[in-house]
Length: 98
Image 1 (tube, rainbow, N blue to C red):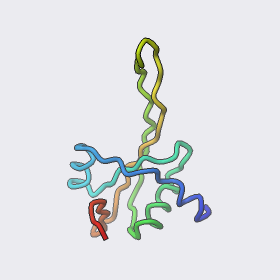
Image 2: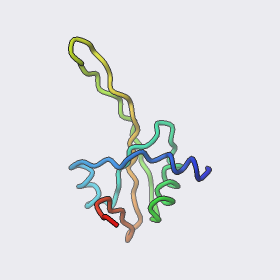
Image 3: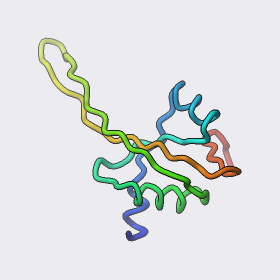
Image 4: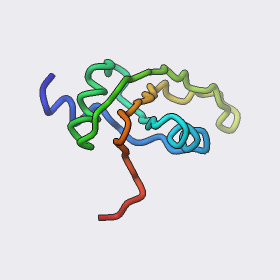
């Protein structure tokens, strides 16, 4: 895994009420990642970018919803979500302004 590839894996943090509960209860963080990203790549990217120890990674492929745009039907893009479990004592805080 090249460092250049690892820097492109994570697209954005996925923030919602559910992810906030998971973060507080299970010490997990949720990211939107590249559709072709693997678990070892996601683990390496999180450890590289945030200087934390990752315990495990779980991924979900999210199918895009079928939506109506005016009189036409379309479909939102498919995407991949990664639940990253952090070791005890490690934390990622997205709201800190440095």
